[in-house]
Length: 305
Image (cartoon, rainbow, N blue to C red; front, side, top):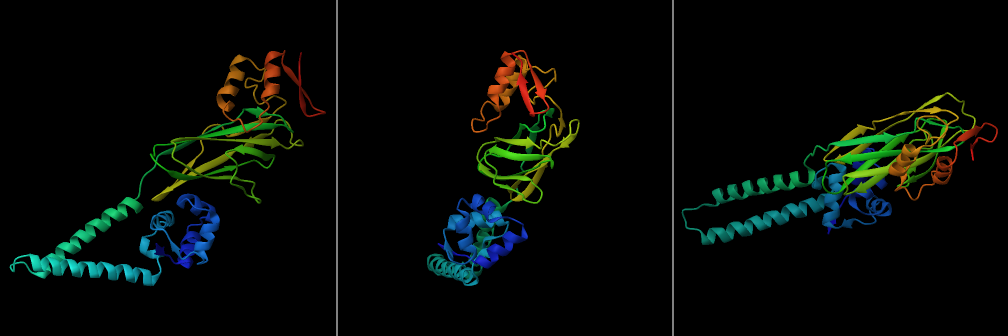
């Protein structure tokens, strides 16, 4: 067990503009635990947790320990060195002196410390890509899905932050995985996600304001940030424009029908999203029928028998 300085932890976290939720995800504890650490209600924590905490805050281990704790650690090292020196001096022939042995010990300490630091805090370049699947059009007053696929070459556990900025005409409804937060001022969608997979898929459903005018084009933008030694931010690529039109979002070619290729695309892209209701029943009805038409008065699609 190691004693940490909660004030220093809070200071470093706030200087990096990190939330307690992000820190909790990176360390593998709850936000309540992070709060207790910062408020000195849990001054002593496990060694493996303090290593993860220092890595997430991008500081050395000593920078978040209590001052007297650092002194104790240094004193323990000093005593161990003295005991080693005395023992070696008794065993070695008289031609050896304490000075060369001390130099050798210090060199070993430096090498081991350097390897330890690089193992936990060394910078790692992570290649990450993010692509958005966005329908070409959608109708006012009705929901539509958006899929964001994130891929990385990193092997092992990784924490990331995904941000998506919605147009003012859109209101988020649900997501898989669920939103971590929605900015009350900007309406931005935020996810903090920890995974050991190299490909992660995010999907959300948004509703267009019924009063939004037809023909208007809505712009989407977002980015993914990962932190592993150093921060890397990548913009989300792919389609970022959605046109308000009296057409169903699954009707990609806009012929007021849903053909075989279009319904297969829906199943390929959204088939695994069991927790999101993207209107598959109506899509199947349109596909099996003779198309659809838009009812401006009710803001609904009418399936043609």
